[in-house]
Image 1 (cartoon, one colour):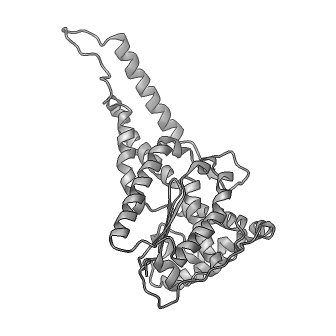
Image 2: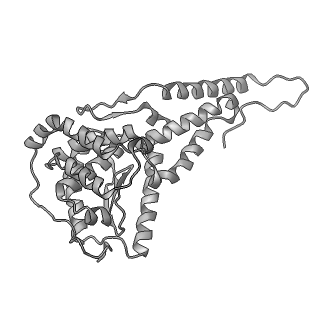
Image 3: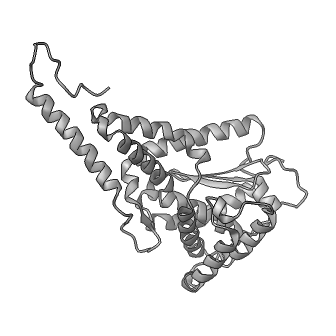
Length: 308
């Protein structure tokens, strides 16, 4: 716990000590500085890729703290899947496929975020029929069997999804959103600055439990789409696959709410944006070394279990 901000008053009418006043002033100054800094617009990271801009809100929460929380949640998820015999074994054809594609993308990630070079990347397959995939902070990737099987994705489409999810991690969108939440809570408590900055750490810790269910904003999703195309193209996967991917997603998402009711851009919007970016990304793809191995999707009527 943080030390008291004001010295104890043992005499009637005694003023707080000079040291205590200075401590109170310093904490208020730092708190105000954090809030002022959080209000600044996003700033670009030092990178050669223009799409790699990261928000200044990420500075509100420790990257190490977020990555540790993500690692713990990822381990718990794998343990639960393993207990249900729903964790794809390393020799599973789709696990081999996912890890091969990831190994082609990962070497380019530190061009966008230098921290990615030290991440302990992991790629796993979960035996669930959900249309889902994600990359948690620190490079923890998971694909659900359903997205591979139901959409019958080819390698280029898998790379489009993986590039998108990896881009969320590279752009530190989870850290940004938690930083925004922390800034908002600090703003509410600014009038009660005597609570001290220790609260910020507790807030960030509480938010760690939301990593598996975190929903990104439409802007975050669009940023990840653009950077994901570049990551996949650098790895030698056709960026035009984003168009076929989202057409498949449209067909599989009939009855989904319109864009203005969703945090995700509509599939039509994503297809339009992908097509608009193709002139920039296609030369990157043309210059890239192409994969030496190609894999197929699961058989359409294969068992849903990742271990089957």
